[in-house]
Length: 534
Image (cartoon, one colour):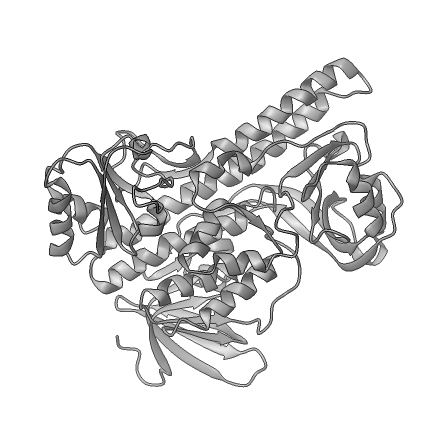
């Protein structure tokens, strides 16, 4: 690398942005021995309760970091409090409501259960974990000002927020986790596209013990959607911060709304359907839009989280997808830097993650808003009560089906030996069956432990009643290529037959790269493909 003098420090990976995605990436990389710098302008955490719903898959990441229990201990709500939602028509106090099943329907397909807490609680646990990762250096109170890359590496100019000083860092790679207005994305020339809903939304964080008492009319839940025909399918949305008095509220407001003359109490009480006492802790506005970058990589620069994609806070997709970005990218960067991964493996990050979020933004969010708008325009109890009640009852099943059909997979990835014609998408079907490109479901071993408790940090081959010698040939191929590898052998019964294959090759991110009942025809070629070595 030839950047001249005045380089303060060199790292293998520089991470711009120390929100949850950036810190997660630093933990992932640092725990694999990759030196990294984490640049974050906030010395302390913002206490706006966004990003609350953590999926089962996200909790699997915390399990592998060894802090799943610590994370659950950080929640503000009681452990036994249900996380699901209530959907009400007209107001929270209205006649029509239901409590549809959601992510709990797919819990058997993951090793950990979901959880819920304000993002700042989760970030605190992540930041604490980062202090134990010796290979990662956090630069809190610093901001990225300018980036540059060459064929050999990247250069990042950073400055302290308080004006105290500047520094120059160099690295092999740079990852922008610096939010929707990403400096890294803009300076690297990556553009974003998506749906602009042309909607202004209000956000309030407030306390109301009276609202807590009114909500006792429902079974215990954590989120409350209020659907009204005047809002064309857009949600009025309440979320619990704790069980007692803490809430937040989102709702569409007029496009020309101004803070100085806006009545923050009015829309909130109208959505509730009662004049409850309210104490505000925060009030603000945000723009409702979907956006996804046209690529997640430009040379030695990558983007992840909100820098790569953003959308309305509908369904908890944003934070969880950002953390999955970090899990997908981290092992691939480590593989490349440690010599057992190729350029095709790095290319697969964008090829795998971008289609998933494109589907989330356009199919699971934009189309849902449109479908809700059409539903409430068509069915109205004031016009035809019987028609509305029949349609309303049917929607309970529809909501549960949406949760089951959200199953991100990489069937079309070049580093996965997926089915012919397979595509990478957020649409799928949860199954225990092992399928190339899909997340590995947990199963018990004859030892009494779970497969997830035995998975290695590199590739893991599950060999359950496999043909003699078939597993060892793949293990030998991995050794030849210096690929970190673990072999787990067991019988093909006791529930493991539900995988449907006797040989299952699992990637470091717990997605399946290859399945078979027979020995690999060319084990070295197999391992070269899944590691992007060509």
